[in-house]
Image 1 (spheres, one colour):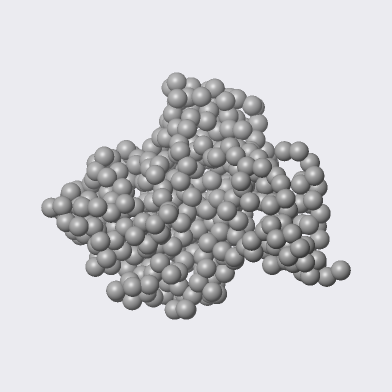
Image 2 (cartoon, rainbow, N blue to C red):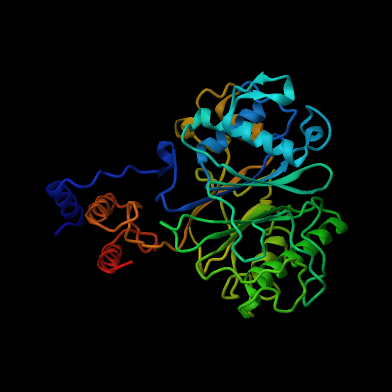
Length: 446
């Protein structure tokens, strides 16, 4: 029997399921997630546009471009670099305090009046363009270089996952020289980490999300600084959060966490991190930051940063329509990395509005007064990078994510199967294997 006819006829007979609409189809201006349970992570160097002195208005090219982009892509976790620098933005002077920058982030999402600019009305904010979207959990790093800060935003709450009474931190805890780690911290702006409590009704584990902005520059000292920071970060990820396969955090007693963590991350809790690494791994002629942080000293040995000590992965994203990989000028400097033994990449991409046909631009861009195709370059000198991940689910057969497995899940799956959008086993296609894998899980108790 024809698969599509079978699925459609069953759904028609029982009338229990609604036809799922495609969420990821850039050729029809749809940039959403394939499945609601996918975790979307976005990293963006926002080039000083998020700061107290910037006009928070639809008539401001960078602020409005940043706001509309976040509203369009609706990440579950957002890494921002180069925030809080009023001098760099050219609208003021100095670096915003942690508290002031947190207030700016609230304005970014919720609008209102701008207390930093004479209580002027804010005319551009995320919820203006995506009313139901919010990222209420915000970590503004205290670590800075005198110019800017790292920020991590999340749809889900921060929580202590490893027993050290800390859910967020602006930098790695100081590493004493050991093995390949030179010792010290995560670079001039720090390696900000957040431990995130994902909904237990959907996910089998939680999440460690982290970001950094490594030293810029092509001179020998800047290049050395990036590698020093990357080696310390690599050691920290492997030995502190993974336990280096020893089952306990910091088994060599080289990491200055106080009070000390009591456990490593669970087997279904991945680490996903990213940011502006300031080095193009394709053209740098050496083992750079992205390779260090994922592969560690050797790609052959079991010393990588994945939980099983294999190598983690860094993205090879390209722009959907042109295939361009550039995120800043003619280079890819911005990356997302992940533990691929736990988190499975569904897709990732670089976004540049200048390369997207007008009919396929996100609907949230409509009305951008400076011209939609210029939105990305007006917003920042860096292009944003987005990645959608499949994480371990509490109950994969709970297809509609309502907390139970029942007939509604079965018929919703059939409708998606008929629409060729039910890649249950994540092998890149929807076929009979997906159907029978779903049936097996549907029949088994969660």
